[in-house]
Amino acid sequence: MRFAPSRVSSRSAWILAAASALVLASCGGSDEKAPSVAAAPVEKGPEPKTDAAPTPTAVTPTAGDESQLSTSMSDLVFGAAQIEGPIEYEEGVDRPLVTTFPTETKLEQARPKIENLPSDDELLGRPLVINGKIVPFEEIKRQVCLGPDGVGEIEAFKLMIFVAEEKKRRTDAGAQAELSAEEFDEYMKDIEAELKAEYPEGQVGMDELMNSLATKDPKAKLKANREFEKLFLPDDPAQFPPLTMDAILLQEGGEGVLEYFKTSFEEKLKNGKSTKKNMGERQFDSAILQQVLQHLLSTASIQNAPAAGVLCRVNGVDILIDDVWNEIKPSVTTMEVRDAKQWIVNSTLMREAFEKAGVWPSDEEAEAAYHLHSDPYAGSIFSQERIAVVIKRFPSVERYKEYRRMYEGLLKLKPPSPEELQKHAEFRTNKVIGQVTVDVDVLLCSAFDFKANSWKENGWVDAEKRMKDVLSLLVEEQQPWDVLVEKYSDFYEQPTPLSQRGQEDPNQPKKGRFRNFQRNNLLTQLGESEYWLFLNGTSITDFIFFEQEVQTLGQPMRGPVGWYLPRLMRRTKPPQRLNMDEGTMRDVLLDDYITWHLAQFAQELIQKNEVYGLELPGTAPKKQ
Image (cartoon, rainbow, N blue to C red; front, side, top):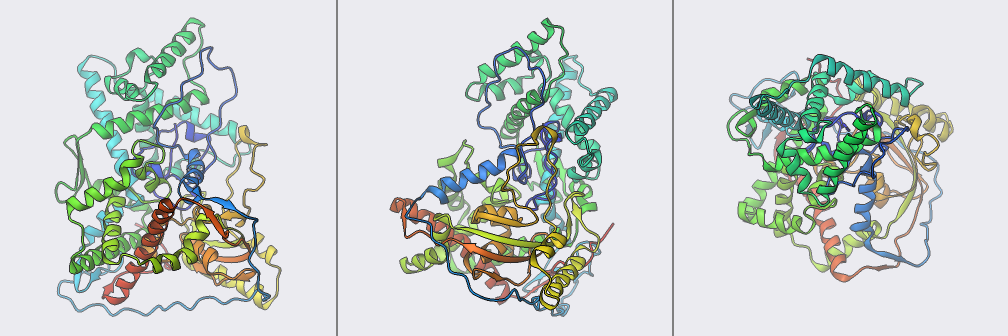
């Protein structure tokens, strides 16, 4: 099985490679956005004497697949052009490594004089007011629950609903359905044993596993995952429930998968072997369980927001805002609250602007436009839904669909002229399509504790102070850059499991030293994404690729997990010619144009309207 933390979507979060083969994450909304990690190792040892397991088709990429998926998607879209001619490099400037800390405008906003304006909330901060209209705190809570923190919990609740339904079916049929305490204890011991085997030096243990699950009761989540596995994929394939059979047979090669399970199980019984599965078998099971879960989700009756206080209703069972909120509340800080508020502000102001201009897509128009966007890739590993949550880092497909509605609105409001597209191509798109690469050092002073999978106490204040210390040592005391990177840069390097040692990528960046990186790959490494760009309107990656002068030191920039200081050593020039057909080129260019301008338009609207309550991170996380 695999697992992914529900709260950290774009922070290259702490995920354990060994344990990922043991735990089934709640997939769907949050699971497909798992950060990039090494693939789970295959356990060494005797394999069952059967034919190799068939490869499941149309499965959600596992955590270990994401880097491959990201690279493949770049090849599919941005890397589709064949590059012609030799690689050339931009000329650098001769300038000392000097910079200053940015002067942020931190004007204290006057509290609006509005009747019934609530007091500041200890966790949710100031009330959010948009052009005199108060956004209820309950709506902010709801949006936090629908963001990266909460979506994983929503999917976990869905999984528990499916578990309860299957338990009832089995109980009604007179079959055993409960996971005994002894079975769960054995399951936990297996996880701990494998962690010790894969990380004999103790870098990864049960504490890190529990932290990575980012939930109030991680054991309860592990138990639900184990129950799901036991109920929907028992060791004896003769006990597979009807829904599992349907899910497998719907896939290409499903008959072969069932035959593999049957033959493997019978072979073990015949030879008197334990039916306990090794790592490789569990990895295969994980892919099948994802297919089963996706089938359950696709066939379930799911209503979003059917009533006040309800996030969704699954097969008649309500998942309440309060239930999800109580699970994530201990880990919610000003960062998660700000993201929720920013989504509310951006989406509210855009809808108002588009409605005023008469270009807001109707429900029918939005649905038709989305199908036109999605249908050509439906069912493939490159489906727009999968790319939205894995690569673009949207918390859920539902939120991505809302975003696409705004996208279509801007396309109607401001269709670009050929001259505007050409200017944008020269500024951005040709450099991405043309696979421009950079050599850059990025010194990160982090407010986030990657190993603990949580924000540091007083993290933003401390990160800012550390960055100012770096500048003082670099500029005033002339300390060597490399020394400061080694001492102060907080990029996390995951320990290598025993089974993968000797297979490490020698070009893996160390302490934020990125070499020969293309734009989309660096975007992921810095914790940024298309969703981040839409919310915030700025990108450290885009500054490095499209604005920073070669051989210069940029100003410190506030980013997803702290303060970032980029030093750009080298950048290739875009090629003179791109071997791409005209239609594809225009589609890619138009998409990049609208994506970038949509983020800028959101920031323009914020400046033109009266918005109160959007706090920048920089205060200590509030504890409950």
